[in-house]
Length: 189
Ligand code: ZN
Image 1 (cartoon, protein in one colour):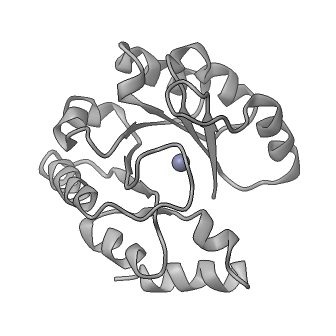
Image 2 (tube, protein in one colour):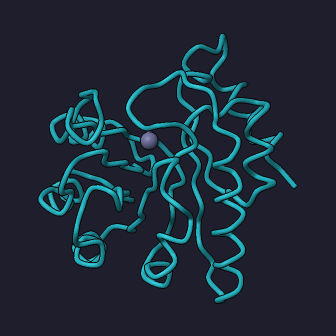
Image 3 (tube, protein in one colour):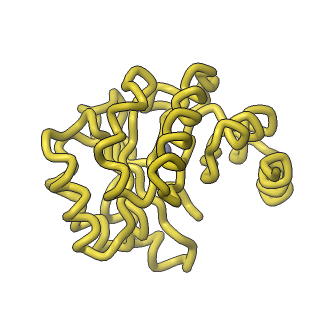
C-alpha cells in the first residue's frame, strides 16, 4: 500500500500536501491508500480525505478532543479507521478505543520529518498494544512509521507490528522494488 503523510504545519512543524494531491494519486493507482493525518482537529477533514480516495485514515489522538467521533466519521464515510500515537504518548492511551479500530499506528520517530532514526523504546509500546489486542481477542493491525530500514523492520515485526512504513530508506535505495522485497523478507516469521 501507499502511505500518504499529511502535515499541517501546526500539529507538526512541517507542511506536506493534502486533498488535491491525494485525488491525483487516487486517479493514478489502484494501490491501497493509507492516509496518515498529522493535522490539528482531524475531525474537520476526515470525510473529505475518504471522498478523495483514502482507504485507511489514521489520525493522532493527541490532535483531537473527539477520538470516538472521528473514528465514527471515518467509518461512516467508508474507510478503515486508525489512531496514531507519538513517541511520548503511552500505549495505554489507545486501549479504550481498540474495539472500534482497524489499526493502531505507533510512531517510531517524532512525526514531522523524514530521515530520522527509530526510537527503540517505541517498540515496547507495539508489544504492549499487541498483547492487549490478543487479550481481548482482536485481530488488529499495528503499523510502525519512522526510521524503518532492513535492520529495524524485523525488530518491529518481532514486537508485533504487521504493517511497516518505510520512506527515506526506500526513496534512497538504488532499487526500490528489491528493497521493498528485502524489508518484506526480513519481516517474515
Ligand atoms: Zn506517516
